[in-house]
Image (cartoon, rainbow, N blue to C red; front, side, top):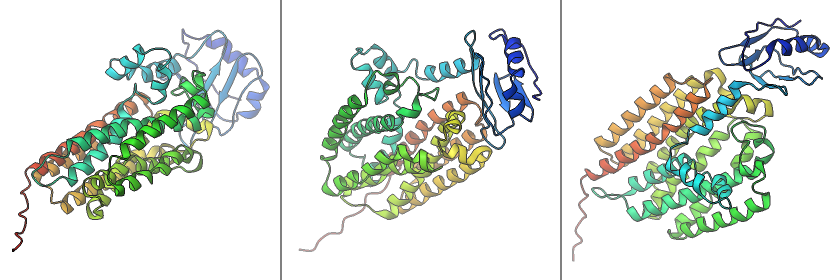
Length: 405
């Protein structure tokens, strides 16, 4: 028998639902343990590894999600809907309200709006997170006492915008079959039918073509280095079906710009500087994208999608603190190898404080909090970039040895 604690809600006819639910034979046979109704978050929590559903119009789907975390996935009835799911979706949609990018997309013509949404123009955070490692590499490679090459920064900014959009298109083409089953992604253009797979493929060809034009503005070493990252971009969306570490692959792809930015300046890579910086960036990506993935943890578990959010579970804050420490260590080593000065190390100290506060106050069971913490990582990239630039400006210019005639 199911032991049920109910709290009446105005939004649903709970009494009739419970009555029908308890009268269903399948329920009493399949659920040997207690089920609890949590009125604070409007979610059913069930301590069982089985699915429970009845055959009437009132349809229940109850799933076990993790060893200690169980979430009621879905209740369907013609006369009601759960207000919690509506609030979650409304929150996720409201995060971008008021931003210039979302306004531009909202006011664009009907014919191009699906393409802008496909490349996430209304959510520019991804482009920034892709650009900052490029800026770090370019800034680190600048001559002592000089600003980074502004033309290169602009070129990499355009490249980050184009390639982030291309990555989103690839991701949506791979994930069309599962995006419709996740609350956060069910309105994407390919799922909603606004665009077909062929439309997306043609659009992707254009995106990659423009990205190639940007890449061709660099030296040959950088062209080959940049082209070699395409494999990571294409395969990343598949990793969530294979491994619990897709965030690692994302980190390798998103921080390739640390290597590319340096090589764009020097036509080579100084691994003593670039490798610890690249590693720090990967650790950073694992931190922020694990936080981001906790927003979809319930849906991902139901669909069999893997992520570090599921892998780490209740140990998320502890494990991410280790990656944060590794990130700071990589930044310190890279700065030391590059003879950075006190503004750089001050920026690293600020980043350390930000990450510590972020993880200390993180609530992995609150999608709104996870979304807020994820967005705050844009500041991490900016702080480090400013630290690199200012620290480089006060470096003493190296005296070039005079060549005897």
